[in-house]
Image (cartoon, rainbow, N blue to C red):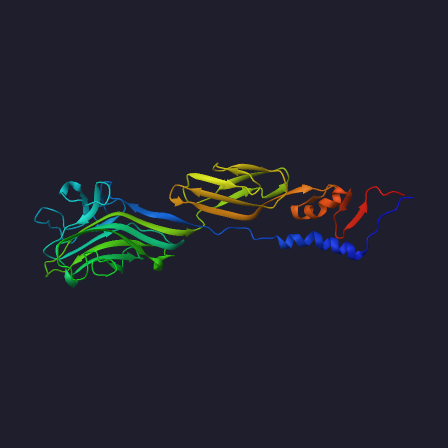
Length: 353
């Protein structure tokens, strides 16, 4: 006579909880928090200037406002224009050209304005450029080199720096400086107040109200606006769950124009393809990450935790994710079959009489 092996209800309940408990302990929400630096604007002024909306020559998509149409005694423009090295001075910081203007003996209010930019997804914004400055003598309070920002496409502007007057920059030398000087300095300005704005323009305003006859030459070169944005790298996969061996197709869904990719599939597999396919041969879950670089974004990494869920098959044909299989493996090795259902029953496959 064959004898079955009976288990008490407490033991059955214990095994029921053991099968479910690991699923709770290892459960982690899917998704990743990613940030990367994006070069939102880069202008070295090397390309030829073209007519803007008012017909003034400006970098492509930029704007120039001209109020003083005169020229200096040497025939040089008193409004923003494209200068090169042919004037006998090292005006550009790099390359052959920069943006700049010469001083006038009468009033000047000259503007160089960037294109409209969308910073609605930016958490940090940094403006950087090189300022090349020649100040024959200190200009007093009537002279200003403003950096301004607009959030309404130029209808109104806010001052974020006055490079010649603010002690932080001392573009023309220390306050009260009265001797000839030539300053070539890097300018870096953080703009945290404009994070989240959907319309941002930056302007360089050369303002001289006249009367003191003390003013300077201002050259600007190598302008960059860099922003930190959330989740510039993103990807998806199809399918995300299934029986092993599980063939999964991954896709780079990033909005940035990356040029190189490094995938980590979580099971030891990797790839440098743009949209790779990967086969999972053992149960998961597996965390997948994509590191991308090149293009307009730099070294962005997106991670999806416990993203891919391959599962395997039990002795009786039932399928189990990795957490249940880890519990059942010793029993299966001993020849115990598992019957899935609302209650769990264990029986010996070949008991002796």
